[in-house]
Length: 334
Image (cartoon, rainbow, N blue to C red):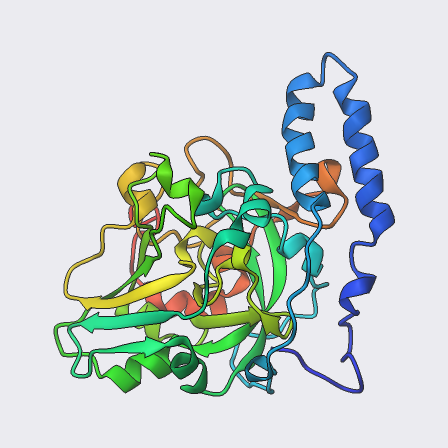
């Protein structure tokens, strides 16, 4: 959420004041210089792709009245950290349905048709239903929440999402006693999602949470960011945001929410179970097999050579969610 005193609130600059154009241009110039050195060729290749993603241009959507934020007292939804710019949030993305490069979603997601849209809520519940997007938006009051977002690849952002706790929807559909997990399924449409024509994953994209995780107030059913409707590349028109887990746990462009008594077979856990566990909580003490998770790079803070931050347990939300995993071996259940 945003805490407002006056026009912008304490410590929250306008989006235009974050990651100014000169910084982006300077980053691109640095990448060009790196690319001229033979010794740095491999690093430069990666860095140029990184800079290309952040240099992409984005047309901002118009504001929707339904996404106007309201004040919230949700524990853990406050941070005084500098917000990541709208430009970076909407050009540096993982959304493999539109390509595997960070710049691909912003370039390709214009093909996604988000209206009309509906989400089927089914499984072990008393009140299964198909909700239109409009019905979902009206189900509960929208809230501005500033959440840290941490990617398994070692980069992070601070994003002002707009939505409401998934628990509001869960209570409405009344899960049966046997419902232990919630499964989230993303749209699988080769006509509008060029990435699903590839075999990089077994489509559709599927994610899941344990019931107590899904009911936690921080688990956000999300419709917007920066007070505006979600851009296609960020998971429009409705997605999950689970801030204490790595970003891939937060399914995008949802078309189905299913309640089940068995642990869902999730996409990345199925593709590489030794690298991506079902829980995927942000844990600096459990490295990815191919890189450390002890530090992270904040997007918009100086690029490739910026000083890295220490990764926080549960992405900094340990006081709010740590009790969910009391007594669990977090190396085994990674």
